[in-house]
Length: 111
Length: 112
Image (cartoon, rainbow over all chains, first blue to last red; front, side):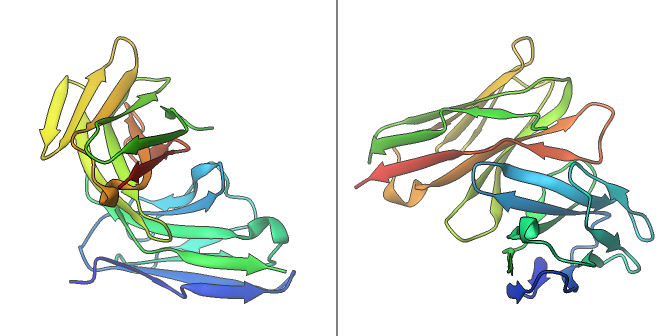
C-alpha cells in the first residue's frame, strides 16, 4: 500500500517550458489536492478535485492546470513555466472530512 | 489567505521539556487538524479535533480547541530530539468541506 505517490521528485525547467506532475493514490479517496510550499508562506492550495472528472481552483491557480480523468490520479500541469513557480509541490488526498495523506513532494526549479 | 495562524513562529526547547504551540483562525470550522513535517519530507497527520470537542489526546500529544476564541493549542509533553520538525495547523471550514487551509507553520527545535 503506497499511499500517495508523486512523480517526478525533482525537476529543473527553463522559463517557458511545460511539464506535468503526476499524483497517484491507492486509497480510493474522493478528494485530491495540489499545494505549493514556499519558505515563510506555508502551504497554499493550487487546485483540488472532489471526485473523478471534477476540478476546482484554490488560492493560487494562475499558471497551472489540472485534470482528474481517473479517480486515483491527479495531474498538475504547467504550460509555460516561470521562475515564480519554483517551489515544492505537494499532492494530498482524503476521504470525507478526515485527515489528508500527503506525498513526499516534487521539487521544481525554473531557471 | 491563510485561515490558520500559528504562534510562535519558532520554538527551541531542551529535551524532556514540554512544547506548546498555538493556532488561531478566523471563521467557523468543521474541524482543526495538526500536521508535522520533517525536513525535506511530506506532511504527516498528527491529530484531528472536531468543532464540538474541547480536548483530545494521542500519546504525548494534547490538543485543545476553544471555538469562542477561535484558537487551538498543541502540547507535546516530554519532548524528544526526534520531535524536531515543523508543525502546521489546518482548518476545515464550515460549509467549505472540500478545502483544508494551512497556516505558515511553527519550527520546533528540541536540543538533546
